[in-house]
Length: 557
Image 1 (cartoon, one colour):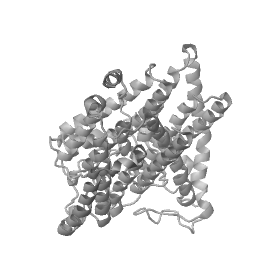
Image 2 (cartoon, rainbow, N blue to C red):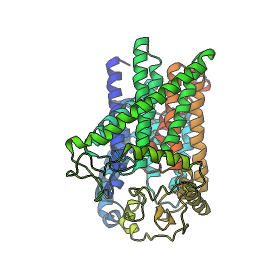
Image 3 (cartoon, rainbow, N blue to C red):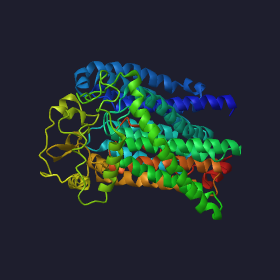
Image 4 (cartoon, one colour):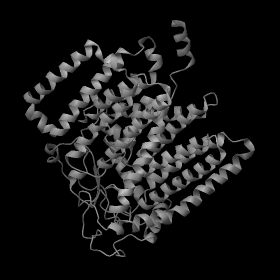
């Protein structure tokens, strides 16, 4: 691949992930119709990953003309004859973007079918078939979500299209580039217009946990960049670049401390362990202990040094322009207004942040922790917030009218979050079945003032939504993906570039899964949820270019 062509494609792939980050931010901060419209734009972004590998001259075949004419006739016909039914289930822009997405990916699917080497199909795509089966079980359940069929079309096509190995490496590198660029763009806006007036920092989101999840993705990007920097030719460049990247890694820990999200901390610890094991595996045996200790101490020092900078920027920079921006349902009289002085008591003190972090961590090991829910009036799940904010993006206005508050499971709340989680888990486990549930059946009224709209566990949520068989297969698919990435990343027989790509995938994947084990991470439109299916489709955990496939192709030639 020519150097300029390679650079152009990397820019294109980076733009794709920047757009996905913007969709993630909008999904995590808006409500109403846009909650249901935004996920459709993911399909147009992901098309940017496929189109560079397609040859324009191949689209001149008659089958594409037939498909194009079919779409031109079918879409208006369906819209006219089923107008009332469509408007009762979809918003107009949601329907338009949805059918255009099907038309686009239908075209790409035809291209993939015509150019797939069917003789080696099961050998080449054996792993992607598992995820396809997962999405089929999701789609055939009684759950009313549409996204499994949309994902099956998109990620099935991504798996079938022959994307060159060099392009796949560019895509993974662009993933980190796009997330980092988006962080500076979004956080820069937050520094200017989002005052730090909630004890759990919201940043550019309306939910502190989703904000922490974004910082977690940025941390994985800097961590992956740090590992790639170790292969730099110039030692001077490597030293400077590594120190700078490690400082940004420490800064992401500081941002997460501002959000007081234990889920993100847990996920980041696991990501760090995967990256650390890979890093130390490349070191001489005699230096493993010294270099490992040096790396841990350096990261801790960067966290300590960056926390005052991070807090100071979040606390004082918004006072310069002093023009607060609120998202939907955020406004209260307790929020900072433009007429409040820069030293208003409404702003969050760094002592309160550290104190809450300390108490929430101690709570994990304490028998009588403080009531952290009552301390957080800005929580997204408070009882006094309109229920329409709590439902998933597939629910329509007609369904919302059927929603009723459930009686509380716990009449008296001791403040122990472990009791809350175990109560939620038990309620969801008791309702598991074979075919799943409708979205309207989600949620548990845990206490009179606390409604849990989801299971706080990705696997339990999917088993509840789509049935036990689909949930079990999803567990096997994701865990085998993670194990495969780690195995290939640690395999000495792979080239260093391939090992880095697999480890990068492992860092992102374990981060997404770990957060999903204890928090919400299953909404269509969120970047981590997109990566759960995108990474296995692009980079299967077991290389396609194995010896059996190479030998059979050579025999064919």
